[in-house]
Each structure stands twice: as structure tokens, then as C-alpha cells.
Image (cartoon, rainbow, N blue to C red; front, side, top):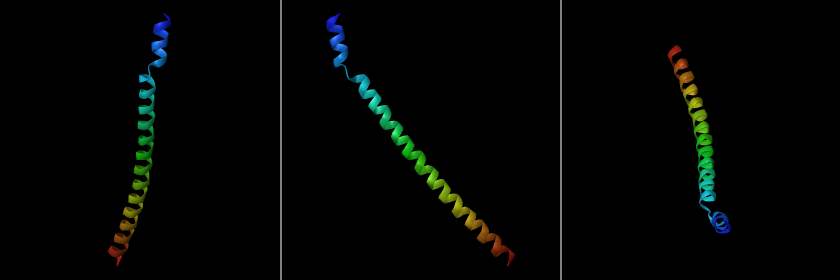
Length: 59
């Protein structure tokens, strides 16, 4: 029983899986933040283009 407990204490595969999970979560947060920022900028550009085309159409 003592050997099994000692072997479990030395096993770091669970810790490695948790570390990979945390890295994946941080990458996901970065991607979501970047996509949101890009989406906002694109939305603003299309709004400006729409306004420009509406004004040009009226003239």
C-alpha cells in the first residue's frame, strides 16, 4: 500500500493535463478578445461605408 501511494505522489501526468488545460483556456480567451476587437472595428468600418454611400446616393 505504501508503494502505491508513493507512486501516485510521483505521478505528474494529471498536473501536466491541468497545465495544458490552462494554456488552452488562456489561448481561447486571447482569441475571443481579438475576435471581439476585430469584429467591433469591422462593424465600425461598415457603418462608415454605409453612411458614406447613403450620402453619395442622396447627392
